[in-house]
Amino acid sequence: MKKKIVAFLLIVFSAFSVLFLNNFNTNFAFAETKKVLLGGAPAGFSIETRGAFVAGLSDVITKDGITSPAKDAGLQRGDTIYYINNIEVNCAADVEKTLKLTDSDVEIDYYRCGNSYTTILKPATDLNGERKLGIFIRDDVSGIGTITFIDNDNIATLGHPVLDENDGLLNILSGKIYSCNITGYIKGERGNPGELRGVVFKNEEIGVIEKNTEYGVFGKTIESFDKSSFTEIEIGEGKIGDAEIYTTINGKEPKRYSVSIVKADTLLSDTKNFVVKITDKELLETTGGIVQGMSGSPIVQNGKIIGAITHVFINDPTRGFGISINNMINK
Image 1 (tube, one colour):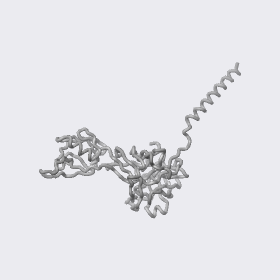
Image 2 (cartoon, one colour):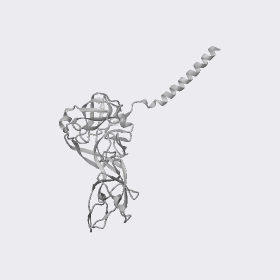
Image 3 (cartoon, one colour):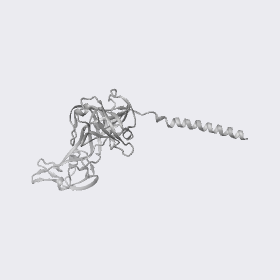
Image 4 (cartoon, one colour):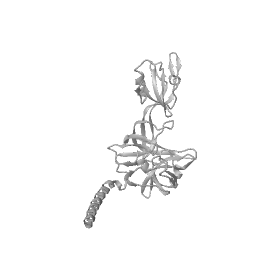
């Protein structure tokens, strides 16, 4: 009887082991090493913001004299107008079109430093007979940055968010990523960060922007974009020691430059995981180290991409912060 019980238990255990192993193989099939396409190429960005950003205030010349409607209503440079009379506005054309719908005062819903406000504004009629709010509207935000990686049709750039003038996360409506040719740079100095300068080719679209996050700007590559020049690379974890960055300071093709990771903290921070020191003599002699436009430059260590450059230290352009690839790829 005992032998039968033991035999039965062995059969049950064997069946359970087979079932467990089958499930183990199924559930952990994703454990193979993740690979992406290595970036380093420059890119031009054009971002349409949600809301009409107030870039400045202006006077309106009327037949009765000069007036400042927006200033009188309490609006300030840096505010973002989201609604006029409960109609959503996102650009100067939206504002102009909405003003034509009424001859009365308008209700303005706007955002300032993380808070929402409402005010009543009395538009002024200028000498051309057009109703004006007395504001300059910025329709889009543009700049130069660096591609970090491409994962299938997903593209990750910058490694940090695009901020508004109040240092808040810029609320984007849409945007595009274009090919860019770096034509020069301003060398970084202590207390004065440098920058890359280049030409953006709007006839060479790379992708569309979908998200502006604390971890970078993300989107999708367009179907016709040629990825054949990008190299496949495994992702890994960074640690203190020698590494490399891939970035572009001339033309379109990225080059490899030596750096040293002097601090690694991938657990206690979401966005500042590395302190990177530039050690490459060529890069130090040309740009002085990290400059604006290098944001997103991938960091490679032991043949694996471990993160991206995000910020330069204002008082020491040879050093900067980096973000972990795992924080970027999971967002």
